[in-house]
Image (cartoon, rainbow, N blue to C red; front, top):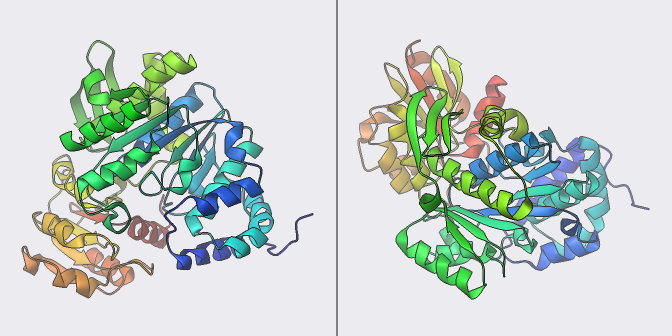
Length: 431
């Protein structure tokens, strides 16, 4: 019988969050021990494993929504969350129960204290066990960072996906695209097909080599799906896939999402071939229509208020930040105010340089999170249009300033960090 240490959900969450102090453990030792302790729950269902610098959360969410629309009992594990820890673990669109978190934390407590795993390792084990308890048929699993030694790479999936590759997490993955590609390519398993999205040419060559060494089929989504954006509004865009689909509406702004859709289309083609899951255009339309309900998908250039317009965006690296300028072209507004924060381990100098290209008043601040860069440090790193930047020590002051200077026809963009988006949404009790 499990010894009861925690009585409430809040006690468990506080304990789990405190594990972050141990930092990131980039190896597979602890996750193997945790999963062995619980009987290797990851072996009780089929899985789809997804890595990438950007887009992995979007692609994971789209695949999850699709499987649900096909009537398949599906779990999804993503990170980080925006408002609620339970967003990380869903079954058929429903958050993991608080009851389960209490039970499983008590079950794992002595093992956690013995082996000292990281927060992500423990939450990965919790997700895998929850999916077994809920008897899912498929689990869509997003890596935390990297791939080769990521805690999720204990899986033997039915297919692997690499969405995109660029420079990020250099302290763990390497300081150049070659090393980062090798790490991300570590999710490619022997004789398991891999779908690859938009990646640099050098990355494509490396991934082809890794796939060949593993006897794994490799499919480039850019080669197999031709997608054209045919119209858009502030809530999303319409697209046609040549010879296949027409007038598909995707409820998220941003041209870069077309690459995620192309990757998704390659995934469902492979699932049709290997898993015998057939589909129609209606299935895809419903997948997109119910994306938020099925996958709790938001925070990717999400319009959460209209007067003034307020947009929440979780872009947190250079590749993602570079998309902001294009995305702003699809909104109507008079003046732009940006509330920006970033983690101290990110390459925020280049990101600030990119943000500085926008004609905007930019408020530098920080969320209530220990890894957040200090606003003064962000300001010191600004090299472009420094007069446009204002320093505010906390989000409350930033919101008060933006409220003072924003008119009803202006737009306020909150970007640079999941944690900033979370604090902003919680401040206004928005979703």
